[in-house]
Image (cartoon, rainbow over all chains, first blue to last red; front, side, top):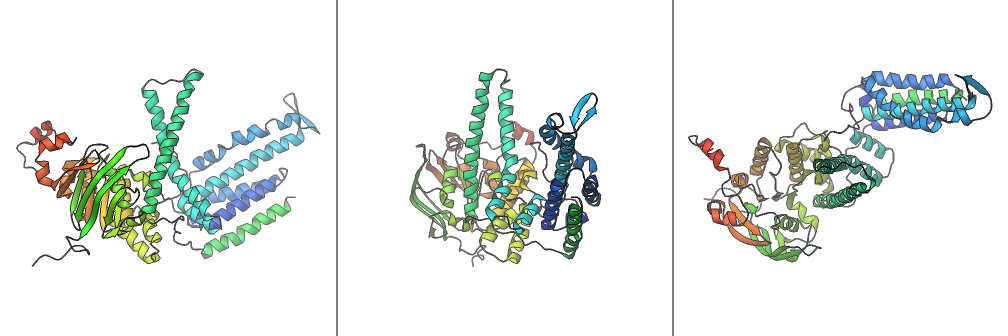
Length: 251
Length: 260
């Protein structure tokens, strides 16, 4: 089955890839937190956030087109929410191409664009430099509940299996001439969803059996402990104060 | 003098004892009816039979995943729940059901870690099991990036890492290409303990098993040496098995060449 790789390029080697996943998760969270809470008028602050991300992108030796393209996927969604604001927000207005637009509304729009793009870019950089298994180990190391990590791990493992099964059902229907055009035909889609549910349920039962046979007692065994090295400490010691300083100055 | 025993339990000691086992699924399907079977340590047994004969159910019962009426003993102790998995390692037909961890290494380490082994021993078992199935170097791969054959081998490695005395496999050659199937045959042959293989691929099974048990309609209908039952075309045909192994056309292409 053809599918996107969530953590594509995460198996490459670079100084960023080698950082402890906990360190990367913390930095990504700090950067997203700083960017989201910075008022949009402080363009310099956003330039610093973008600069840090660009530097990470260069250090990680990731293909820029891939990373930027993936991060840009978020823009249509965030823009859709904020697009109406320049028209309805009151206060001072400015004329653009014959339209009276609210200045405050325009700033909110710009802020939404910058913040969502920076947030998505940070997330894409994180998963592109950290294999999913390490990311989970990092989240567990940061104190996320083990059950939640197990759920994430199983979801990541089986979402592709499930998508594959759905694709096969769809193809099987198409191969027998199913071309949905009228609403009553949608019944078939409902039946497919039902069959998918039954299959998933049965798979879950077999899987649980396999887990019990290998000694599962309600909790995934902890993987090898992570190692926090000097490079991780230095990276955090330099970048966290930088982010804090930018955020405090941009008031 | 007899040759030294290849496995810890002496050959001839009972590995599997099933007495009058019956099992009925929730929907009323009677999967097993009065099955009695005794397999000695070190034996290689093929469990053959048509679709729906009860082969998979019997394996599940041996592993303790389904509980029917009747006695099931594995390696000398009563099976009452899935802890029999330590003695009997079951490889499922669909490897996707058995590889549930983010990476191959974590999957293979799952069993040993649940046995509370030290990390050094876990690492040694992971390396050893992956090497045994020819997947050294696949540690960091995730299961959904593996081919069908690689998935099957990874699932076997995950079971081998638990060091079972008995290796049971459900249709190990299903959906595999010829090369992957040969690899699986090699892995089963190199397992030193008792082997139980449920399969309809008799030409593959003949390479690893010396005894054949035919199951049909939840009952054992034949039990004997592999060659003897393989020669009984009528019996095989009657129970939905392929007596020829190779199609007549393929055989005519092979004439003149020495059979391998």
